[in-house]
Image 1 (spheres, rainbow, N blue to C red):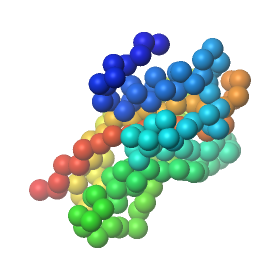
Image 2 (spheres, rainbow, N blue to C red):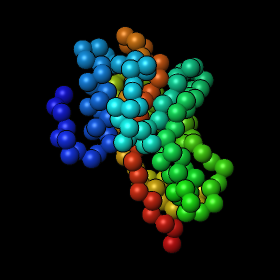
Image 3 (tube, helix red, strand yellow):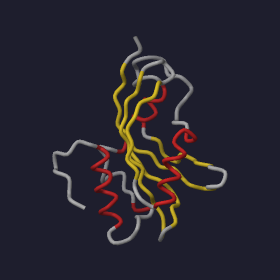
Image 4 (spheres, one colour):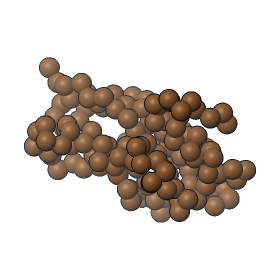
Length: 151
């Protein structure tokens, strides 16, 4: 995979390059290889999901960066009173996670959703498989977004 330029700002391309470098000639890197210090400037926009039971679709976020929590609580810290929702609804992203698990390959996505305050959140995200051999044990990803206030 080609290195993104040092000036590359897109989180999805930077994380994809980092993941590709970690995996080398393997299908995917392992979770314990992710080093938050190496990607410190991206870490608040990252998430980690454990895949525990595919049949029941039991996804458990073990890390959810503060910037992502902000998108789902209705704004940035200090702008308004936070709401109780602090994590994305994994069931709404289930088909993307299932694709990562089935293919053992990254999935890139963009779209929009309303947050609890009625604002529109437009986003880009990547979901990257982590595991051993061809078995996905967790999904590492990142999301960047822009909030468009409700009118």
